[in-house]
Every structure is written in C-alpha cells, then in structure tokens.
Image (cartoon, rainbow, N blue to C red; front, side, top):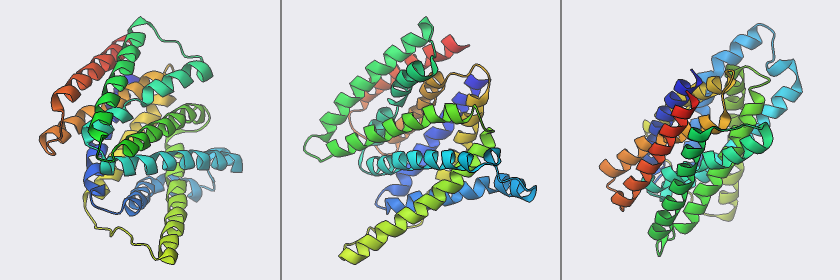
Length: 295
C-alpha cells in the first residue's frame, strides 16, 4: 500500500512542478511562494479547526510538538526558496532531474540514522539513480556555460539537499504524530513564517530603493497548492504505514520528473532532449527496480 501511495505522490508532484514553472516565469517568486503557503494552509485548516473545537491544541497537546513542526516548516521553506528561484531560471528538463537526486541523499541518511537495509533490487535502483544524477549534472553545467545558469544549478542542488533533510525528519515526526495533523500544522506555520519573511524582505527593498519584480496573478498558482497538498497527503500516509522505507519512498517520489520532463519537451521545447531522454530512461529503470524490490 505504501508503494502505491508513493507513486500517487510522485504523479501529483510532477504536475506541481509544471504549475510552479508556469507561475514563477517572469513573476515575483516570493509572492508566489507566499500564496502557495496561504492556499495550502487554507486547504488543511479544517483539521486544525476541528481539533481546536474539541479543545485539543494538537501535536500531543504540548508546545514541544509545535516547536518540532516549526523546525520542519523552516527546513521546507529554505528548500522552497532555493527551488523556486532555480526553477524560474533553469529548464524543467534540468531542474527536474537535479531535484531527483534527493533520494540519493536520503538513502545515506536512512542507512546511517534509521538503519534501513536495502535488498539487491533496491541497491540496483539506487545505483542507477547515482548514474542519473551524474549524467544530468553534466548536461546542466553544459547548458549553464556562458548563460549564468551555473548558480541556479547550485541552488537546485541546495534545494534537493534541504528537501532530503526534511524527508529524514518526516520519518521521525510521523513515528510520533498523526499524518494529517503534521501536515495541517506545518502548513499553518509555513504560512506564518513566510508572511514574516516576505514582509521583512520587501521592507528592505523599499528602504534601499530597489526595484521589485512585479507580481501577476495566475490561476496556475492555485494549482500549485492543490497538487502539493494531494502529494503530501499521500506521502505522509505512506511513511506512517508499517514497513515503509523513507529511502524507497523518496526515490519513487522523484519519478515526478517524468511529468515535468515531457511538459518541458513538448510545451517548452527545451534543449538537449536526446541526452536528457537517456537520463530519464536510466532514472525510470532505477525506479522500476526499487518498486520491484519493495513489493
């Protein structure tokens, strides 16, 4: 069951990446991110409201639980900030596979922290994941030469690293709290922290007299939150099930690159398609081995 939930989460993440790309193109990234946190928190608000109506403050009824979720919100927001700026400037066919390197980082943490052990099939999938990461990084640096995209590739890598930290922390959190409760409260704290952050940044821009990228409303912004919320619900429930392995779930979720890849090729007509298609096939083969080894 947790494998199917991980696959469903991957599909939703693929559409999330596409709508994110459409939303931030030529737009104010910080405002788009803030609206994403707002809509996500509103979608999960009923969980908090029902609990408060019953006199329950949530997350074990302690301030410690809320502090732990605030830490998660800070980790995720740092990953999002790096990820949103990188995807604004990078081709989807580069940003997606770089983000797909996250499971490799999660794997190391899962083995060292949680003592997870992979079978031969799963190790084969991970090996192909490593090769895919190396291959796409070469393509990304090639496209970045002379265009200033090198720093955006580094930002994408930073976003993947913080995302891996978040995934490992999720495994720990979901061993202590209910999935919907974790998602609802972390969405709320994300909204609060992002609201404070964007207010301080915009105030700094005004004080220095710096120009700010104008914001344009697009309906794709709402779809970012819808698909992200659906992806997270499936993800949190997958991790909460007995026997779920964070290293495998994280790798399967990176299959989201399939959706964004074909959108980048068909709709955006991005470059170096043949080389990127080879990388995608390697990644899909790795994901297939992981699924087979986990069944």
